[in-house]
Amino acid sequence: MLNRSTIATRPYRQRLYAAPPVRVWVDLTNSPHVLIMRPLIELLRADGHEVEVTARDFAQTLGLLERHHIDHTALGRHRGGRLASKGVGLVSRSGALIRWARRRRFDIALGHGSNDVTVAARALGVPSATALDYEWARVQHGVNCRLARAVVVPEVIPPERLYGYGARGKLRRYPGLKEEYYLADFEPDATVLEELAIDTAKPLAVVRTPPDVSLYHRFENDLFGQVLDRLRAVQTVVLPRTPAQREQLERDGGFIVPARAVDAPSLVAFADVVVSAGGTMNREAVALGTPVYTTFEGRLGAVDEQLLAEGRLRRVERPDDVVVEKRPVSPGAERVRRDPRVLLEMMVEP
Image 1 (tube, one colour):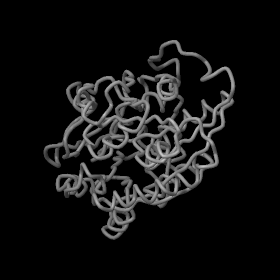
Image 2 (image 1 turned 135 degrees about the vertical axis):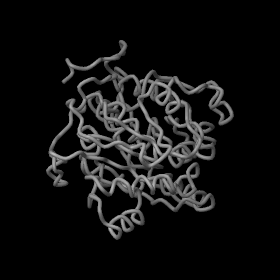
Image 3 (image 1 turned 120 degrees about the vertical axis):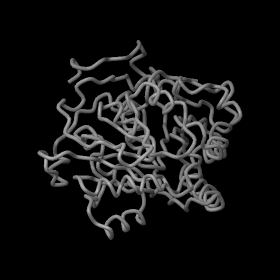
Image 4 (image 1 turned 90 degrees about the horizontal axis):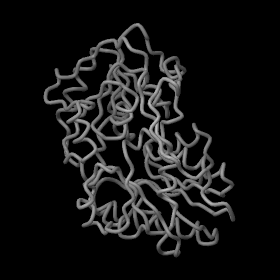
């Protein structure tokens, strides 16, 4: 409940513009982007602006859009983790976006790390804004930061880490975690436990697989595999990123693998422990007060560096570092909730 949580906001205008309404294009290329952009889309529409959404067929992006009842146009797919494949995918999907958007006369384009929309928007003469919270995805940010008009980032990231990407003079920095903004209105829904036939009397671990198609995480994560083997002995839900990961998990057995996109934030809130080799689910767990471990073996970003230093995120050195036991506290008892309009204003203000 809001009255049990810490509210961290600052005064902001209630509306984006008094008049006239603007036409906004939002592009989503990965599962977390649906949750990140959902409240911004809702705020824009509530303010009377027209919003159209495009989405790439990758991971659970389309399934989450359907789950959240967000109308969208599916365009393009992920082409794989190799640099050459990513280049082909960028050219192909950006071209498809240009053809789709040419006659729609958008006033602004928004994305969270979507290279495709910044390239397409620049080609169409539409100002764009991007957001990011991991600074070492060099190829991705080298495109986005140079082409976007505004680059929205957590204030913990040292600005000089982004200047080499062309972000100097474009940075708009916000306090806290992005998850504290897009989860501000979130309350856990126990339906997800029934949906997955979770035994609430037993400890529950939730695991997110490595982003093995990402350029900054291209190697085998052996530690993650060892942790996964250890968690086979307890009640564990594994959320795969790709069809190949899903097939392997189902073939090996011993885990609960959802057949479709689920309410992952609620699952994280009710979990006794979360283990992820990526970033967003780790930070969702932090924001929701769930113990969380990272097996990420790439270069740490400033956000995770701070969370580790504060003890809010724990790094796995050995498989037995992960402790799974029932939590006595209710989910989300102490949370920081931040006004998502802060992020919206940073992305859209001239």
